[in-house]
Length: 361
Image 1 (cartoon, rainbow, N blue to C red):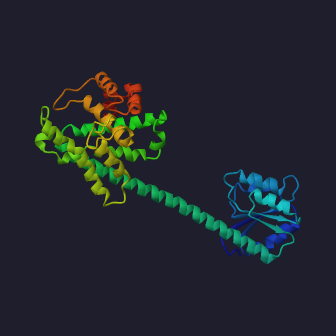
Image 2: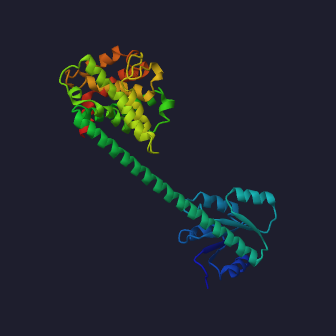
Image 3: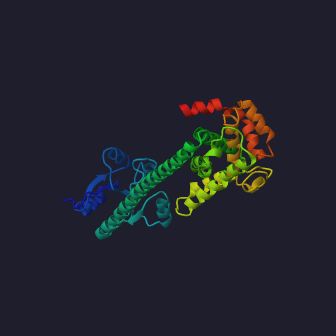
């Protein structure tokens, strides 16, 4: 009578050994006795055992040859194998363990020892499978949780961006387009190994997503300035410039109340630094060169390029060629020369017609 659902295969060319081992195990497990390695692989096409007892010294195919084939067979590679041998040879024992055997039993073995060794390795295998399943389930749970957090973050970003859009009728399309430009620019920088070490430390998706908040500070700008159809006065322009500092302050206040702040870290920099200039004449901080974080230097160039190629209350849209020439004139003064160099080198990829086509698909 079988006391559990476990299946054991015994492989030995000696019939007496097969009978002895079978009689020891038959009341504990479902047992199959096989006289050779070749017959074992025929049986494995029909039976999936929980453990194999394998004689080392067999004609035609030795136990070592059998285990090598087992470990190279995907469906059988994880089956625990205990070697049975009458030869006390520690070098051979080590060789067998190196091939993947879980244990060695020396003939003649006691019935009690055989059962205890089998129980031990079946328990270890059961625990290993449980741990593997737990690990897989945990990975799925983490992936699901991560996706949920990303979706929540993106929803929050879109909601805030829409609030800005309702106050500034040019911001909505600007936000979508600059996201595309930013993602493309980062990809090209990585491919050309420019600032690649720093960028590789970022979660690129989060970084690009966070750019939706770069103009969030415009919420704090008065309508008569934000929506003015003509050029701003010097006083009005100074007021408008405050949106960068306002934006950084708004995001910083959110960061202080949450632990999920990786994307907010990027967003704070993008909001506060996208009007800084390479030569130090930008605002609100007047940082120069690499004093401005890389995120801000990236946002600065795509922000300007999109502003140039689209209508604004105070100007008509530039052509792609005119905007590229303006970027060229600002290389090394307004813009980081390495970043602007990449945009200029691959300028055809930034053609607004291509970007608008991508957004409408």
